[in-house]
Length: 159
Image (cartoon, rainbow, N blue to C red; front, side, top):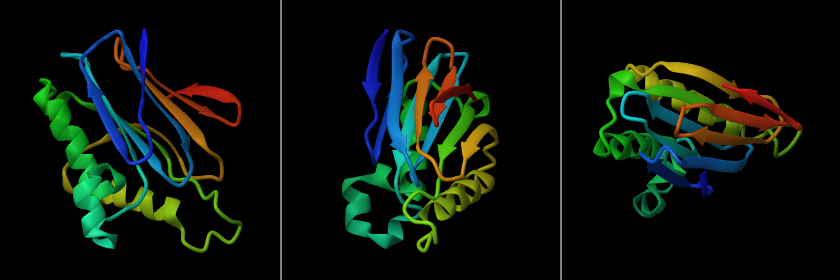
């Protein structure tokens, strides 16, 4: 089993069943996994911010940094490997409030809202989620099965 690390503002997709995609330390960032069980194609996006209008130049260079440019990139990259939107299983994790107690900027909350708006607009259903609260998460997508594991506060849960 090979492991590919998805960094911050990064997206990776694969059709290799011997592959695992993993991203670490999702705080206010959100990790989105998609998996098409028929063709066994999946992907993982780790985005930081809700909207590319915050920095259009950065969005052109690093589209995976933002929800509104990263999510389409994730889906289109999977389509290129044979995935079909209607079969894709979508799971999300992250969006925590970890920066301060007052949560002044509310980045995690804004990221969650952005994902919900984009998915609602595009008729995408989320099948499982582990979002919000105030702790970091690590997300792993197993491409052999589509299993998504989330490690948070020392425990591992399956989404």
